[in-house]
Structures are given as structure tokens and as C-alpha cells.
Length: 627
Image (cartoon, rainbow, N blue to C red; front, side):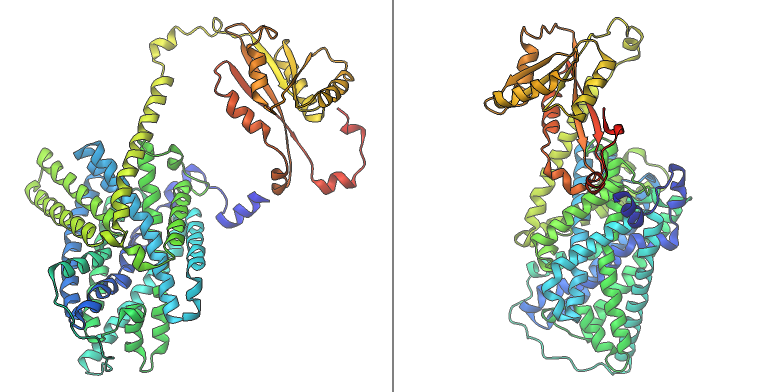
């Protein structure tokens, strides 16, 4: 049943050879990898106004234009920088690989940790912002914003678990629809400005406080969320069809052009259609002002596509995070399970981890964009800085054609983004960025500890060719002694005893009873079998199960000799119904967990599959049921 549901939701498994068919070109790569950057248009300007408007009043709109210009300039610089990253590191990993290769392991792990945090925040912020747009347009849904956000995250995870090709088409069409909708709004809005048909604006608060440098920097920090997602293309280069580098660079250029037009256009329009962020999503209010003269269907089209692109903007993280974490896992700095592809050739474990953590943040912060935005952008700008610094060092070492110009671009990018990191961290510290400031170092320590563990395991398991050549399997053959723990005499325990006969002549059955009466019953039933396998019964007044067995092995009664191997064959029945599992104790799990600590003990599980409850109760017992 579970497999059938899985096949319906995810689809049939794909062979390894199908990986080439799962890659995308420019047409579907652009919406898939740019949805985060494009969607940030919906809340970057809004967050800037949210900082300025309550303090300086209507002056905020003019300041928004200048800050938007600065952010667009930074976008251009990052675009030039990441084109060079794509050229030199076409195997993905982005900032992590660049920093690790040129600045050392610690810098690489820092970039990987910071970018991982940013991807998680991308999902939480984008989904929450998408729900905010809907609740602005339809207020009765506001109390349900958290469960609606969780449902969206589940849908995103499901879509990505179906594979790269399907998800690119599923998430790509809404992105193009949003570009068209917002482009139409910008054109129509400017036509109203040219024709002087802009509706009068509601009175806004006048300046109550001076426009200070700190206030401007704080607003700039909020607006920098518009740049998140730019690095996703460099992380996902291996997902492009051949020639991957050319396609990735084209997508990065188109992404930057789209963000430039949409973010720049909406920022300028907001000066003419002055709306208050306190009344809800800014773009929704601007769209209402622009289209309320008879084009209401376009207003709803903008609202719907805005909601969809914000919800699907998280898909950029679903494209980037699994690929990034797989590279990190491949190098031993994250659990290796994260480097495994699922049934549909996507990194399914990475998708599930991303979804789980993002959903947790949505619940903790009540899907509040303003609360979540404080945690946003710090991580990505740390990765920006380390990536640009790494490329700068690469040019200084290797030089090459036009290396001075390339080094200048990356060096300038490193300086500007480093300054942005400081601004964002300080300006947003009390709003939540302190969590990221502390979380990234903790994540770095965890990643280094994981690497240390894998290194230690590898060192202990490794055997050189010289050592292999002198191994004598026959010489190292162990004498096998078998113990079959039985709770009672039943079909499962008898099956285990029969199996034990096939692997050794030295077998005992072992029972732990909590009282003598129970032990007596087990003895009476066991004697009815007339087997030559001896039964040892030990009483455990403290209800321990493993301790009596270990003490017996070490006692003179068992006569264990050093070098002997002991195979413990554990009888285990399995039930059909998933809910039935909670009705049975799981002694086997505890037994295995304790016995595996002893290197001379081998654990084997002898299964017995039970039939469905209704089937057993309705049918009559036959001779086939007798063992």
C-alpha cells in the first residue's frame, strides 16, 4: 500500500542512465533557478518602506529609489563575479567549493554553512510571504497562515521529489506568468504617470524624525533580500544540459536583467502610487491602484501570480540546497545519506531535510515575514564575500588572460559584500540576525565534527594492498557458537532454532523470565519438542533482558573461549498493518543495540511474516500451518 501511494505521488523510479534526460536548458532553467531572486521584488521594497515610513514619513519613497539603485548596482557586480565562478567551477558547489579551494577548509565550510542557512530561510520567507499576499487580498484566511504555509512546503517538497525535469516545468510556467503580470503592471503604471491619470493617494504621515545614516543602512539591509538567489545558478551548473557552462551563464544574465527591470520598475512606481506597508502587501496595493479603473481581472492576475511565485520562490532553494549539501556530504562534512539520489534521481534526503527545518521555522515564527526577514540575507552575503574573496585569490595565484580585470571585479565584490554583511548583521541584530550569527559557527563545528568522524572511521577500516596480500582467510576462521534467545516457545522461536542448526553444531536456547512460574511454563513447552538443543533459563528480578545474556556468555557455565564468535539468532515476527507495530514491544531493537557493542558477537534476525488479522480469524487452521 505504501509503495503504491509513493508511486502515485512521486512516480516510477528512474534508472541512473536517465540522469541526462532530467537536466534542463535555458528555457526551464531560468524560471527554476531565478524564482527566488524574481520573487524578492515582492518584499524587498516593502521591507525598505517598512523601516523608513514610520520614522521619516513620505520622504521614505524618494529614499527607496536611491536605495534600489544601490542594490541594482550590487546585483550587476555580483552577476559579473558569478559568471567567472561558473567558468572556473562548472561542477557545482558554488561558494563552498570556491572558498575551500582558494581560502582553505575553514572558509569553505563557513561558506557552505552560511549558504545552507540562507537556503532554509529562503523557503521559510518565500512561503510566508506568499501567504501574506493572499491574506492581504482575502483577509478571512489570515488566522490560517501557518497551516497554509506548511501545506505549501509539503507541496513544494512533493514536486521536487518527482525529479528535476518535472519540477522545472511545473514551477517554470508560474514564473513566466509572474514576469508577464508584473511587466504589464509596470507598463500600465507608467502609462498612467505619463497621462497624468494616477489616482490621488491617501494621506501619509509626514517626517517626524530626521533621516539618519543608521536608518538608511538598516533600510538597505532589508532591501538586500532582493539579491538572494543570485548564487543559485553557480551551485546548480551540473543540472544544465550540455554545454552546461554556457547555459548557466545565459540564465544568470537573464535573471539579472529580469530583476533589474522588475525591481527597478516597481521601486520607481511606488513613488507615484504611495501606499502604506502597514495596510498589507505593497505590490498588491499598487496593483489595485493601477488596475482599478476597469482592469480588475489584471489585478487578480497579479495577486494570483504574485502568490504563486512567492510560494514557488522557495523552489530555488530546493534546486540549490540539495545540490550544495550533496557536494558537502561527498567530501565528508555532512551525513553521506545527503549525497544519495532518490527514486527520481533528485537528492531526496536533502529535499526532506530542507522541508523539515523550514516548516519548523514557519511554526516558530508564526509565518511572520517581518520576523523571519531578520534572519534572512546574512548567510547569503557571507557566502558572497567568501566566494568573491576566493576568486580574487585564485586570480592572484594563477593569473591568466585578463586576470587583473577579473581580480578587480572579484576584489570589489568581496569588499562591497563584506560591508553589506556588517551592515545587515548590525542593523538586523535585534530583529533576529543574531540567531544566524550564532547558528553559523555552531553549524561549522558540527560539519567539522562530522568530517572528523568519517576520517576516523576510514582510518580504522582502511587496509592497504600490502596488508591484503598477507591475509589468510583460512587461518582466521572462527569457531561459531549460536545462542537463540526465546521469550516463549512459538513458531518464530522454533524457526530461529531450525536456522541455527544450519550454521553450527554448538547451539543453545536462552530464556530470560521475570519469575519462576513463567520459566516453568517455558520449560514444559520446550521439553515437548524433544530436541537436543539445551535450554538455559535465567531469572531476572529487575526485568533486565540483555544483562543476563551477557553475564551468561562471560560465565564458566558457558565455557566461552577467547577467539570464539557467538551468533545470536533473534526470532522476530512482522505484522502487516502499520498501526499494529505499536502494539508489540521491540525487545529485538534494544537487544541489537546492546549486543552490537561487543566485537565477538554477531547478530542475526530470523523473520516470520504474519498474515492479515481478518484473514487469519476467518480461515480454518490446516496442516500447512504446523511446523
